[in-house]
Length: 305
Image 1 (cartoon, rainbow, N blue to C red):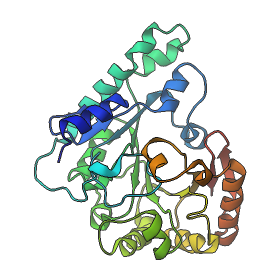
Image 2 (cartoon, rainbow, N blue to C red):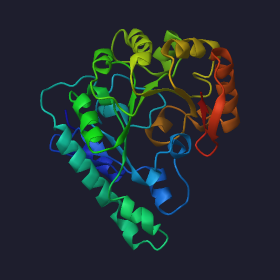
Image 3 (cartoon, rainbow, N blue to C red):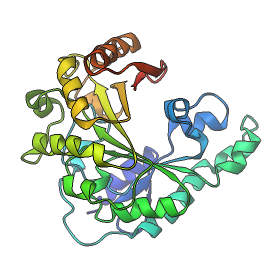
């Protein structure tokens, strides 16, 4: 289930820190976490939802695993594993303890930075939000329910981002995340196959089943749409129909960013401007009775409620 040595070294050079002993869980500090520490800006999630960027722990329990090879994914897709192939994995407590320790080690250099906010320097030692979205599909981790529960026990808020393929695992969660995201990156099955490139059968059906299940969750729910110019920014009325089916609390419409390994598959021409994202979000909102309630131009994202 883990990476080979060269793959892991490559990821570590790009800022990943693996935790546990089985090589499937990792942490990477977010750009906005680092910016917030020196008071140079915050993540749009702080602006939209009140999450403190400097206390956000960006991690994944399933870095190598995903059922999709999305064109816009910034990961190196050559190491993607579709299924969890064995029974060896680290337990949630080990992952959470390791993740917090790794985050602190990654940020320790800021204690010698005279531009760092002294109050935030004390607070970063104890992160309060887990963004379970770093890489891979987190619901493929067999103990995802217990992992959310472990974070909950420590008074974390948890943002879980899923592609909606593990329908039963989502449906059977006993520990509610603070906010559950479903990625909705295509308005039709044809565009979904072309852009999200699923590696399993019935993927579009699985996504739709998860959308239908979303309204049953006790947690806050959100649909995230990554806009790729020239690829999936069409048929806003069909996106709206799928959003109506899910009835989420929030919809985030966000630009594809031409970074990482996605640059091998897409170009800068596929990255929409903020105005293009906002215009497309408005069209979706007009078709499902939702209005733009917030926006972040620097992150090219718009919030519909």
